[in-house]
Amino acid sequence: DSGVTQTPKHLITATGQRVTLRCSPRSGDLSVYWYQQSLDQGLQFLIQYYNGEERAKGNILERFSAQQFPDLHSELNLSSLELGDSALYFCASSRQGASSYNSPLHFGNGTRLTVT
Amino acid sequence: GESVGLHLPTLSVQEGDNSIINCAYSNSASDYFIWYKQESGKGPQFIIDIRSNMDKRQGQRVTVLLNKTVKHLSLQIAATQPGDSAVYFCAENWNSGNTPLVFGKGTRLSVIA
Image 1 (cartoon, rainbow over the protein chains, first blue to last red):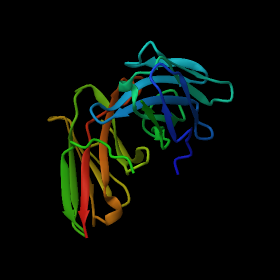
Image 2 (cartoon, rainbow over the protein chains, first blue to last red; image 1 turned 90 degrees about the vertical axis):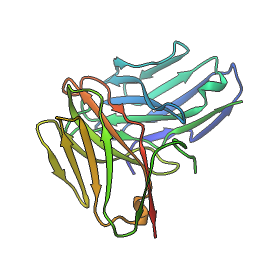
Image 3 (cartoon, chains in turn orange, brown; image 1 turned 180 degrees about the vertical axis):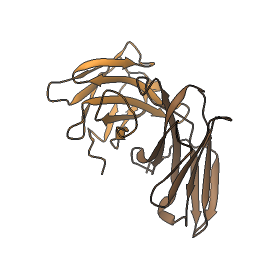
């Protein structure tokens, strides 16, 4: 068990809808990262927060947004969903503001999003 | 469970043999590397990491080798067990971690009992 908790495990919704994915980092970890995993693209970095502030941004669509709250949990909001958004969404956390030696990323078990 | 990367390269190994999983990384400026293991239906699990000022690091039954000259990373698993069957990813970053981890495509390890 990595200590990173993601909810829900599975989500099925229709095109055009909006969903919220939730992540609780490991105790003591200040950084939260969101990754998308699809069959074709592998693990793609979306966005990182450190202690409540956005730290780095990857290829995140404008329809997607995230935030990290004072208690350090994070939410990823996906709106105007399209069929191509179907994927596994992973949250990871690390102790520091960077993924580095002795502060590696630890991943949750993901949320499986299916858009129909 | 869910399948990850149906078209990944696959390595099949007999139980008890040693496994070697290879990774060619992309950025000569990368200074930190991690190996992750992903089992079906789970998130990537940290195995071992190495800094660019090292060329070898050992863990429990695993060894990571780094060859910066040819930008190559390998993961060696000793006495491979059925529980080692999974997809293995290498990941890299640079600028002392101030860039996000970039993941490779992954290799599926299949252990034959």
